[in-house]
Length: 498
Image (tube, rainbow, N blue to C red):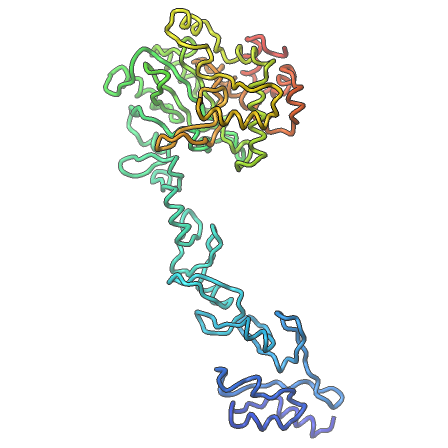
């Protein structure tokens, strides 16, 4: 290249010219500028009044034209014919520029159509990357991008107004422990919502007799935990009668209630099956918490001191709830199949005599009540087996049981409950209703351990045929050595390894 050519290249490579008057004169340079400048920068394009051009590099005395691929159509174009989008650092061909490039709602810079958001006025707008990052946030619930002036930060989450309203409609903020709690888990104390734990701790003794929030609605959520990561939380309901109608104004009853108040993990409620007594309901607790931390022994001794009858009352029962989350987090076919396995273990025909011994439903108190006419029906009046043929596939048996249970919830396994409006609805827990009531704390531990074993078998990879072939002795072999109360109870009832 001659010295004059290098001089011309250096001069033109940094030229800045007015937009309109002198643009046509540049066309005279011929192939040095591939298309006409006015085609690239029309007078009404809104570009600045001066243009800065970087000349193509030279090779062998000829200008070397840079070719780029359009990110939208994929075709190659000369760089000089393409539009540069500064906010996205992209070169776009002329055709794609018309269909893909828009003006940013916030800064008015050009940007590609890739970032939609909702403005503070509720309109859907288009943004460049910088404005989206600086002025907008993404809802952690629905993923919607909203203006920072309209989002809400609740429970540590950034949410749009719609999701925040829905969250507030379903949850209350507990003023006692400063956390958000589902409304089904809260009670009002002095005009403000409290979680069940804070309600019990904040109430003055005696705790009033009122219907507690049943586990069938709360889903057996964790309140008292010792082992992190598990979902096997068990709630227990123990019924008993002492010949007195519950009455907060009765001094005898008030004294009992004041002493019961110190058992923070449970409280009492009325129950139609024990009109001259009450039902003690525990909060959902892990099995280890039931055994090591909750004072079942002291609670049972308190009831016996005040003349309550459990195992020797014909109508009193003990019910154990377990969350359906143990069998699967959603109501899928997998969850239903696992619950169906649990139902089959309790319905198994050749195990029924063993279940009668285990549950104590055929105790002498029930037989005497039937004989003198004070108890109508069978010993299993409150926890009957489902009338299902043994050969029925277990998943079909489960479907039949759920339908039958809707009309008669007094079954060995209950799937239904009542909501706030006294409507019969599917519960969030599975309720084992087979056992007779008792105030022997070791028998309560044994029932909890047995239900835990049954749940683990149901959630294992055991097949339907293996369940049908399983013997009671094989079930006993699945009991961990640490379940000493259950093992001793089975030996006492002559059910160990038979």
